[in-house]
Length: 196
Image (cartoon, rainbow, N blue to C red; front, side, top):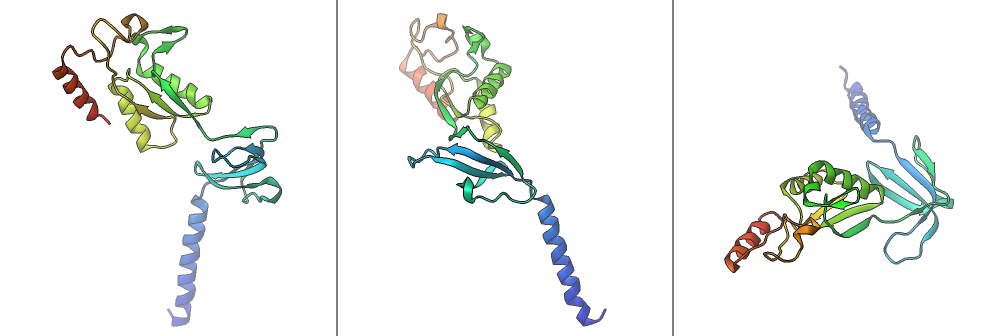
């Protein structure tokens, strides 16, 4: 090979890498004409365009000056409002099924069903207080490893109650710590601390 051909080979190799990288980049989704409340306290943008790629918002701008990337899916959101995800600040994951609350309802299937329902309501974080079995903590850890796979679970683990007292067993809260002594309480609290 002659030396003058070497730069052409290198240029071709670089171009191949760049083209290959461009092919693996995902298609953008563009939401246009939506009212955007960003949660910072700034006034809403009455007609905003959001560009989303790989599950992340990569740009926000007023719709009248926005340009959609080539080969993007454009969805008109006129008349709709976009807000940050909401937080469910007090829940007991899995406790309710239909109209009944009971400890027996706390199954992995029911917790996943409730998390899907929360996501459909725009809830991005769920604070679950005092009823979480080990499988809920495993779901929480799996979500940490795959952000965006559903509402984030913030768990208090199993809660604490009083022997023969609150929270009421009849209300479905029979699966909580009910220490009879200070030593039991300390041991149970130390066990919870290891699960954070």
